[in-house]
Image 1: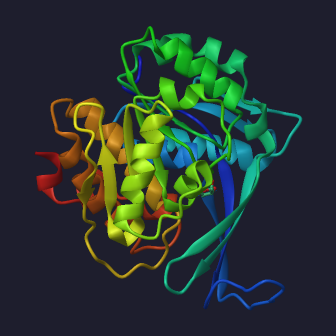
Image 2: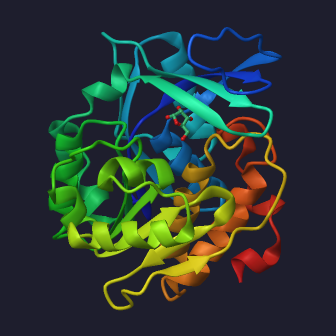
Length: 311
Ligand code: RIB
């Protein structure tokens, strides 16, 4: 069995997205223009994003024994994702996400974990050979942290790099996730939950970078939506700002996931590329995504993107 270059350990959700004029206020009831059901979940999104760019990928996670779970499994396979270690949990429903998307592209999301909550250390040990042989292993926080830490520990003896996308953020995650990650990536909301610093400017993002480095992160990447990205590494600890391409957003759902999927792709297939150039290209791909509705439906294939992103 050939090992995939990118292994994602993470969630699958069925997304129920309502499109509203603006995000509702506390206690407010709104009419939506439409409701769309699509395949999502941060883990699956990141895996599909990398696969559509041309990466060989595998997803380690869980779907429910319901018909939606079985349908989702087939869809992942159609996207070229290896599902050898994606387990169907017969006794529980698939994860779901209730998403509200405003006219300006902003969103908020409520998740019911379902089968994602069953991801466990045993799932990790069954997939040991994939994890040890991957070039890049990607994590988020929509599956239990004990399994994440187990895989990160295993990976210390493996050949690959880890990307930990701490989304959605936990206020006090197991401290090992900071130290064991090679690249630690969060958006501005998650950065605030983890550090207590409100990320309202690029300067504030730089403060967060220092705080996360103090927690033991080697490389910190903070995504700031239209404001781009701020990052720093152990070797170059002064934070660097990478601006984003300005486009009109229709739906930002999954933009962070396509960013992470693309980052994994460039790390695996262009290992000599600088992190700054990697991030610049990821921002460009994320900007394409937010101009179309939905998470996975908006993720581009390599054939849809300019050639210069692959040179
Ligand atoms: O990041 C977007 C994703 O978050 C959605 O697809 C939803 O399922 C939630 O996991």
